[in-house]
Image 1 (cartoon, protein in one colour):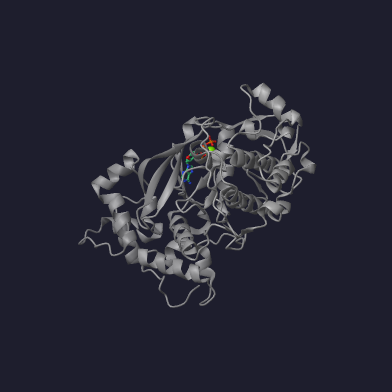
Image 2 (cartoon, rainbow, N blue to C red):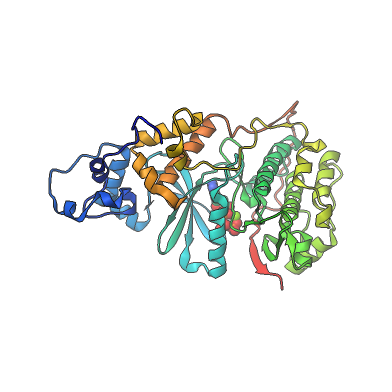
Length: 442
Ligand code: ATP
Ligand code: MG
């Protein structure tokens, strides 16, 4: 525990953060701080002195804020703004954290519309994202749980998605493909190293930040495997990206299925069209099982080879992720950052560390939390809540900000990059978004 007591909180100060008669989750007090006898005492109201106290106070006492909470214009510490996307199971809205002012994407799921299977997938989505921390994977900051809805506060990727980019701008120039694909590959390598299989890789789920950093999103179909050869049996994902074994076999292994989807994705990026196309699911299935696709001859040879390596019909013959990062086509790509370790830090780390033990960015987070009014007491009480805690939410947002400031999301570069003068417009696939489905292979 850090000495110096900058995180020590007096119970009186903590109690001042909450209204006496209307305790809420967001009052962030230890329930023992406000005893029933204190509720009866009427003294001069204490003036909230920190941003946290002001916010928690307004969430209980300010009529306008309370109304916004009731009508869903505020969710927990987030101020909700317009819609930025929607999916099969969710609506996604832009939101701002009321304390840190950071933008987040708030994925909203209506519990009443989720059947048992969908609930299970959602639980997995949250637990799989919980420990992930990689520059090319969308981060989960916080989960706000209410009886009717579940809100996932996610890192906001404001640069649109890959599908829209290709539909609007046509096939991507070779160097741009290299930079984008290398980041997708880096994300998948990280996921597989942590035994997470994405299972829904598609251009719609590859997002960009406003600075052009790639973010793999939507872990709704992801699964955690105990070993690389762990057999899976649920068909899920988007049919045009589905590997042949998903249509053919009862069981399949996770990593090759993600590799196949990356092959389809790269084909789409370099040509602007999909390798397997059909107007019915039956015909598409046939097409994929047949393995009938043709890479246009103008695609550079090294790129053709990597696509063919990923679209091998037999999963055991398909390229492995490790193999691809060192291939001819990606060799000129230079990553400015090393892969981050698999352990995502948690606020409790601030409690357990001795002076000088924390990394520079964690020190920055500690100072930021303190400035906002979070105390050691809040962190201690945060305990086992993981992302279902506003303390974790603020901690993760501040940590991410500190890491970004240190360049953790600088996009890779291609050594000796040449700009492609030709950007052909391609409209054929405009508006055709690929929906994801799941069913059990019987
Ligand atoms: P589906 O299964 O149909 O792909 P879903 O319900 O799982 O959808 P997401 O894919 O996670 O939902 O999100 C739907 C859309 O919302 C995305 O296609 C994207 O446009 C937008 N979106 C999701 N997450 C973010 C984010 N972190 N930043 C910006 N936009 C986002
Ligand atoms: Mg999606």
